[in-house]
Amino acid sequence: MAQLDSIGTPEQLRDPNYFPAIHKAVPLGIQHVLAMFVSNVTPAIIVAGAAGFGFGSNSPDFPEMIYMIQMAMFFAGIATLIQTIGIGPIGAKLPVVQGTSFAFLPIMIPLVAGKGVDAMAALFGGVIIGGIFHMLLGTVIGRIRFALPPLVTGLVVLMIGLALVKVGIQYAAGGVPAMSKPEFGSLQNWSVALVVIAVTLGLKFFARGMVSVSAILLGILAGYAVAYMLGMVSFGNIERAAMWRVPNPFHFGFEFSVAAVLGFCLMAFVSAVETVGDVSGITKGGAGREATEEEIVGATYADGLGTAVAGVFGSLPNTSFSQNVGLIAMTGVMSRHVVTIGALFLIVCGLMPKVGAAISTIPIEVLGGGVIVMFGMVASAGVSMLADVDWNRRNMMIFATSLSVGLGLQLVPSAVQYLPETARILLTSGLLPAAFLAIILNLILPEELPE
Image (cartoon, rainbow, N blue to C red; front, side):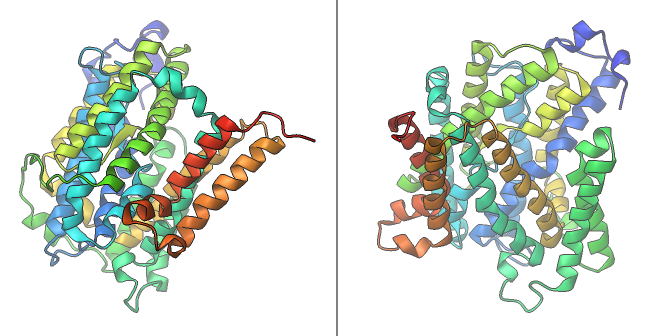
């Protein structure tokens, strides 16, 4: 990684409008892509797998998985450009990296579980409408932050991680579609997943710089190499994939689903708060100042617009990526043009099905090792946010009640089997009932409990 004193003066490094020399800006932009690449494409693979898209080339739905991987890259790039370049008041005009959000997975998985391509129209209807609603939050984001203190946001992030750890274990053992097969949970499957975990942890704690930041990506590459030696990797799909493919409007159709629309609109609050935190982290870590109201509002507008546009073309919701906030603090380079270069790289990759086909060759067990770490990190981030909470009796009761109801409904979905389908999908996500209870109880309960 280039030394900071060779990139620019301290004043230039803190300036979002500074453009380093191109031979220095390009590797810095690629660093941002490497830091977020795996996390960006993983939700598309998980949603496709939950819907029942085949992981093998013989599945009729397999090309749809490749398309979703493509769009995850392409629209992460487009959404990032909206943030860095801006469209009028839309966009923070800061080095904000956008990518596919894990936060929406607990909502998306129940919507599509086992329903195949037919469920995608309703899913993307929810993505589009939820994105438009997210944009509207930009007009009030400053006034609603009071309702989302660390007690609420920490609980929500913790619930996201807890809701997803099951997926990580299933993938490491052989994948959801393989659960009925005798090799599910085999020593070979777990060995590959454990290689990913071991290499990731080793690099994260014993390496420095970009190697440490890209630990999960490098761990997956190590697991991929082991899986290849064990005969678990096939490259046939790369050969059959086209060289170029442009995004297709309403590729999966559009359908209005109450459950999808409500779920995505409610989760937009969480995503908006996450983006506010990331923008604040960027300005503090890169420039040593607080984010302006204009930057926060612009980032929220861009978050929603990027999600709505992505939904039109069959891509999942976008949000700001926290790992790239850490990368800015590490490099000290605040230039939005550096991130723009990374966004252009993502867009080019998203136009090439062969890149998506190459990603699809990663065995599900390898991906499982990576997401075990990633989802655990999501839960850990929630715990870290909860560390800022004053743990008095009131807050402990709010947390206990919200966590018990949310996690309990997720673990025992049959407890609400007689409710209408829309209510059942929303409640069994676990995340939404926990968030709703925490917000309401925090607003209505008195600050002091009677002695």
